[in-house]
Length: 199
Image (cartoon, rainbow, N blue to C red):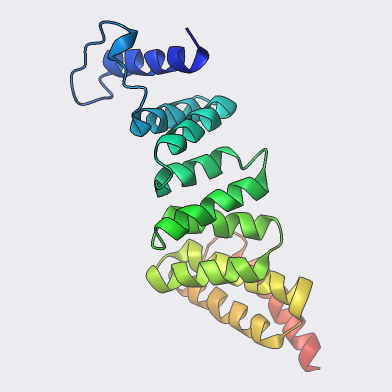
């Protein structure tokens, strides 16, 4: 019996024992498993990822996508599984998920965070702007937008508008969450830069 099929049996056995699956399922033989069900492989991928078996999770998600290549959630989860080994491929999967569902919050957030990590600040800004427009009260999205504007100013643009907008957003975050981690340090640095530019 192959590793993938054994993993599927293990998944269902664990689900039965822990009653993680709400329906009662009785597996009588290997033939009871529908190997053509993309949801089966997607669920297996989630299970394997949560168990720390990232490589096997990737295989399961890829198999799910072979059966249903139009599933934004599976594309996003595959992207997350690839973050440590292949950031470019992960980015492609997040973008594919957003092509299928432009309103898929987790895929947009994952893409924006990855873009921040690899220094694609302009692209990250665009994605965080979209998230802030959709979720204006989300402190994390506002904060991350300000971080990227500051990074863009420092590393790329030297455009004072980016600096001003970053400060404005940081102060907005401060009104809601004054003790937000690293907020005061970031404001202090940008205010000092602003004073240097104005002197």
